Image 1 (cartoon, one colour):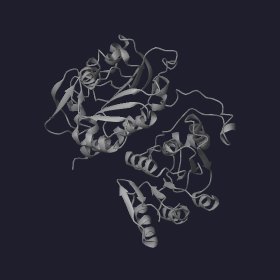
Image 2 (tube, helix red, strand yellow):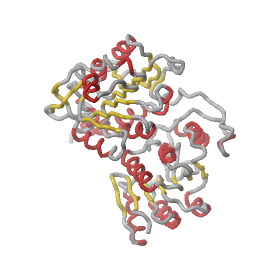
Image 3 (tube, one colour):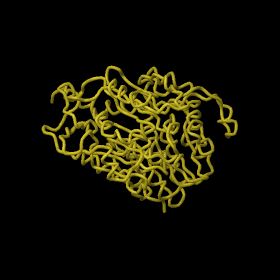
Image 4 (cartoon, one colour):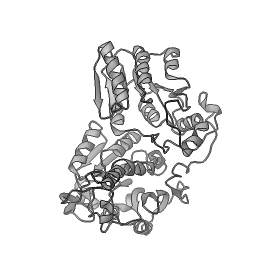
Length: 455
């Protein structure tokens, strides 16, 4: 096989999506600019990951999610199944209503677009030899058909088609308070819009650039808002490595329990970069855990393996009123982990402080109890009966097996024990050894695994 093709396929499947995620906004920041129950248009829902995040952040709002690629649309509908405040549409938003060519990415379906890829892009992503046909509609025409009289927020991730979608929304645009858009600095596709074009078009209609995380040699994401007293971040200029630095340093919440009320608060930081891509929280893990919590309403949850708390804080935010999350970690690099890169090594001395700061920023200090212990030490010391245990630990065969042996007996009746890294041979071997000993069944969904409710 062509080595160049293998390398570019790897970039398209693994590196490109990771970079895009790292340059994405923390959606909770958007609360500063939107009403409590916003009407949201999401164009380019892909697999529904951002859709479900917005649905949980604004349970009283409504998210209208558009995804024209059939396989992605089906995944999105599965992801948001049962979530009442999401409505999905298998349509492409554009400046005209009709039928249009749609160029489908094979190695990265998220790169599919109404715009024909240039030869340059073929070096990174493989595409179907012939375009498919999709239904397009303007936002104004869709709004008229659906009886929508205003939209508070637009989330546009359309691989070069963002400006066309905006041009099809001239009538409803005066009601929009904020627009989050992917932007391009290169002509990846024939006729794709550029960063400066979107910026100038929106500025002419009263928007200001409030936040951005961009690579000026590639692409990025930008938030545009209406000028208000809350747009204090309008002069902030960020690149892809500075995406969390828009938060100022602060003091602790004096009403919070220890250890939060005496900590010097660092800026919010839930993602880091490196070989392990710490901060990664796969969609299938998120969807399954969300379903477990919605169905079983656990009051006591344990997560082992926290790092900066991306997944732990997501779970904690979903718990019923009065629920408790025990976050177990040493916040020290274990012997099994890789030698950290420079940016990770610099983080390690303040890793625990950073996690506590993240909890404070997310206003979860009365839900999350940090347990700074080794996993087995915590299992022995904690006098609790969890309804849900999530193991997000190093895929070391011996340690995974020992975690199962020591945590499973603590699980409440009908409780769920689950974890990550099913595709890792060491993890799979440890789980199979354990279930053969205790005679239970393991289920898995991609890289996520779980045992049925404990009897």
